[in-house]
Length: 132
Length: 436
Image (cartoon, rainbow over all chains, first blue to last red; front, side, top):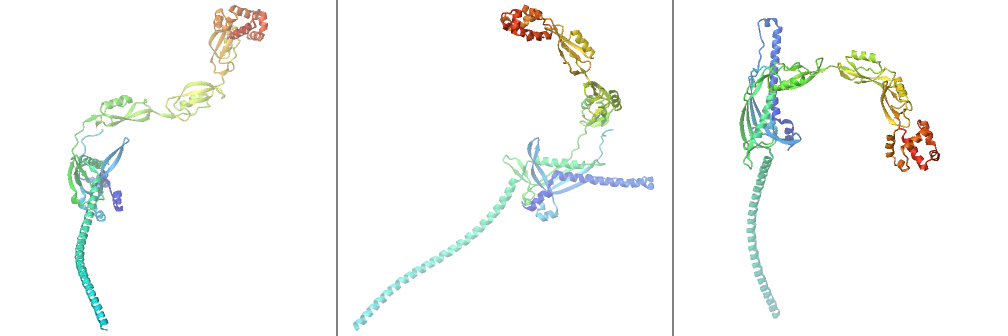
């Protein structure tokens, strides 16, 4: 393995679930920012007598649908998990993100990458009421 | 002259003939050599052709080797690639999806998100193993693989809405004791966990619950019960105080005095010398603190040699109690033989003093003694003789006994008209044993 390849392995790759966790978290963080913005607008309206008098309300947004297309070099790595003193060999999918720079520097053929497409939708609030 | 000329001519002719012969021989040799050269030239040409062919072949083979080595490298890497069954591959993707869902639920938000579809286009090698089972291999990250060598696996996973969970009404357990509350919660199909909080409510009583009673929750939801635990206070230091002051100090700290014990000590009488729990520890509100009070103690009087009546009187006079009185056959009947505690020992007031009083020696007592003393039989000593000795020498006090024991065996033999001096030794021994 050349030095450059070692760098890719060490720096760029992460377990797929970790990448996807952060992708999911990214959407949630974005939603939080949207809400913060709406909240700030509502506070501004509430502080403005004229606007509140006319019943102006801040708009609230959410991502109704999010389509993701992740192009990644997926590889399998054997990991050893220790459970109750026993070693279990398990395979884990690792992903390295693809970008133009990476493709040029390491002569990686883009046609060889795997694609993960995910659709994330917002769901209506639960009808069940927890607590009273 | 003519003859000489003729001879020279003859010689010359023979020389010419010889030279002609040699010329012919050389000519034929040259011919042969020419033929050889021609053959060798032909051979050289053939060899050159062969060489050319072999060089070409060598180059071809070298190319083949390079190609095969490259192929071998690819195959080696392919062998080393982890083999995964389709089931395990799917499990890995499922783990990844679960984590992605966790990412989507990582913050409590106004809007909830869920992963609706998950499409994967995976570039991988698909192979069959020896048992004809399908397995999947993925290239290493740093491996250079022509993409056309990889198969494309496409699959799509969709979220299926979960069925609506039946809800359970949380029972009201406030006011119940911990064990009964936990049983009620568990019987309802919920889980109970406990936290404690200092409270004036009885210890172990449920004083709070979360979620609250009558909430609707899914099965196995954990209900956190808040259990009352007694409030605690710091135990004050009461060592060195008088008892009545100490009681007031304890009461001001919401504590009370527990068992009081007296212990002989050099400290001033009536002063607290020890407490339990120790000072500066924590104790439950209302708990008791045991105290030990210093006392001077009473010296046990010497009862030995006194009459039973006198001994009892002495005990009472010294603020002690008469304990058990036992009797033992002795020369000194009616007198105290031993006592516990011993004389001079310091004890707490009203401690019981036990003592042993001598009773008159009977025939039975002596018979019993003789049984364990074979010399008596050997010398013909009978109980009557012993009684006679006691009477004759008035052996009813320690002083008299000591005087008798000081007498020589000979004197005793003479006074008692004994058959042998050894008998006096045996009598002395028997009397020593009759001290009690």
